[in-house]
Image (cartoon, rainbow, N blue to C red):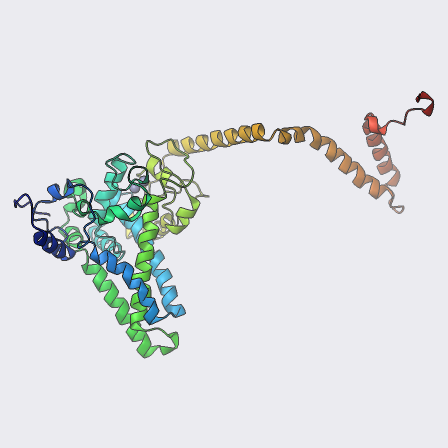
Length: 403
Ligand SMILES: [Zn+2]
Ligand SMILES: [Zn+2]
């Protein structure tokens, strides 16, 4: 837990720098007190944020290490397996407790989550719960409507005031010392993870040279490139999911549902659904709303690692279906107003269909070997009589009528 310390009210630059450096290792190190730090105005802490900058700069390593299909596919695989950890673990378990697990299961999930390099599960959950409490109001740390797109996407995570975890907002998680430890020393797992990839690449280079990969290549693609892409994929929910897509539910915020964001984030794109009802394990409320995270969690539940997945209540599903119906009726009315020719088509189509049937039948009637020929011909004649009421079918006016 973060300890509150009393210190001078205006720390020197050296003190600020040294504090930021120590926080790379111990993220709960707050000499002035976490509360005071959180009360500061938004300001990028360039020293504190250096590991995050290095993460991005590491992507340029591809210039030196090159690429192999194995390393690139490893990066893709690690993106999705860790996006599942962001959405299925940090979001749907740590933030919302939408399913249950054992203490061992919880620790295992926390380790998996820590490989995403999105800080500790408690920090993540604290900020996310805060987002739901203050969505799109001035208190929301990453609202694109309040702070602009860039700040909601990446700026807020660099702000000094957003670094400390408010453990009072995640008391249900803070009672487990192993989770607090992982949250406090949040670079330990990422460093181990990156080192493992480097080691794996070196082993593959030595024993399976046919793969054409190396230790540095696996480090750059598997860790730096994959993790940077993972950050920006996740950050799209903060920046884009309140801007892009449709609003099924009239929530107090501006959250939206987007298929594209759902693909990038394995189901988190159904953000308006989620803002309407946060307690269900699934964010795609209907079968056509693809939600791979939910499918993965369902699979995990069959192993016994997790259980008690929470469904979407029937009342919410009915509310959503009613909203969809209402919206489609409105869209049809709008289309009819904007394009009146569409509504006149309704009058034209039956006559056109009758003519088409008549033409097809007449074509068949001309085939001599068909025994049913006369009957078909009769039908066509009847149709022709019916159509004969139209002015075009009437015989031309007598020439004597002409002046
Ligand atoms: Zn949101
Ligand atoms: Zn949420």
